[in-house]
Image 1 (cartoon, helix red, strand yellow):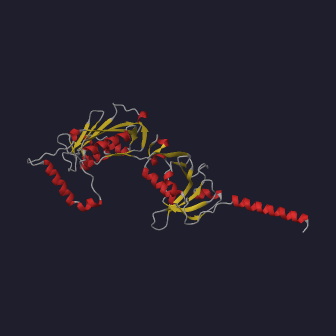
Image 2 (tube, helix red, strand yellow; image 1 turned 135 degrees about the vertical axis):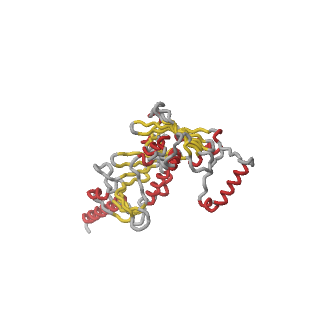
Image 3 (cartoon, one colour; image 1 turned 180 degrees about the vertical axis):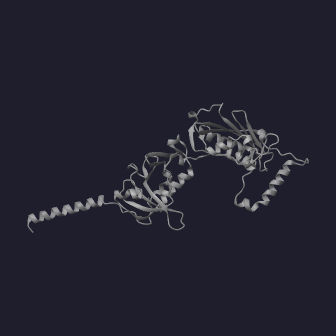
Length: 385
């Protein structure tokens, strides 16, 4: 072998070695296989998630964690629904590959996995980051359909952001695409059977008052019903109480943004047998119904049963409770009932938590709830035929 041939072979060898080294350093990672999770390592890092950013239909919003709470940034940092967050994170972590699909962008639209910035895109992008801003998972979610069988899961087309490969995956992944869908919308929840009275005052000085004498009574009586009249429906009367003690909202705003005109508001105050007094102020304005809430403790409201025959009332109450507990022992073991009368300390803690939750907010409640609260005595009267 002459010197020139040796030199050429040496050069070829160096080229091949260099090429092999480049390939080893730049080769694509092993693609996930059928049966593997889309993000194999995510569940180990799930507690590190500090922000969830959702982009869809030209809008983007972020749910951020602050300590032990989650807030929706674009909704004035109002608390998010922790159950929905947990459901989304676990759903993303457990999403499992069924099979690979197209890598061609021209077919993305059919599967609903276009880049969210693309014109007319129907896709949703969800990005999860930790407190340092490091991306833990980022996924484009496309079309979904119910999976075969009775698994209760869905099949969904997905694509990792920046990766051309699409996949058909299976799991229970739900990513709400509107910021208000992530809010914790239940802001007032009091057991109706605790209520002893409700008074609704209207701007025209009309008042609707309903009440019951004892905690174990089921029905409320309209106190100020006009003489010679009767209610059309006892159910309607009870519904007023159950509606105003269980409120959720359509939207929420900081209290500083809405001014309540005292001449236009309807004020509803309900009182319980264990000292809770809640004031709900309703303002109809611009075809919306705004509500603000406050609560206080009133010792005078606490029910003190009186003996009809002079017997020891505390003993009677205790015997009644024991009898009820014995009668419903099996049911109570499965689903214990909430006590009708709460201890004073528990009521005061409830008031503190409620006031902390609602103090800075005004809520837009659904129209059907507002219409129930706005009823007057004449709306409940039975009309003669």
